[in-house]
Image (cartoon, rainbow, N blue to C red; front, side):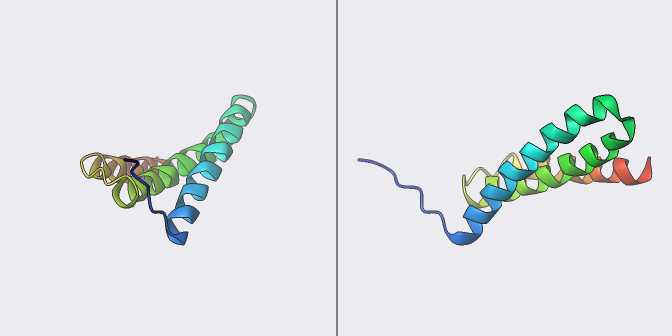
Length: 84
């Protein structure tokens, strides 16, 4: 018997957002090797990606234990990007 994963429109958008943020993160990560100022954008993208991963982890995959860790990491990374 197959288990079918039901995914609604909001969840499809968040999955697409997660993929898009990951692609931008790789692009800016490579670019930050050449321009150090772009590393700030990388930190912000990582923080946003952590928030999206936490949402997808909670709503789509139903994994409750890693969600607070992703949220905490997102907050710490965004805070360090803006206040350091």
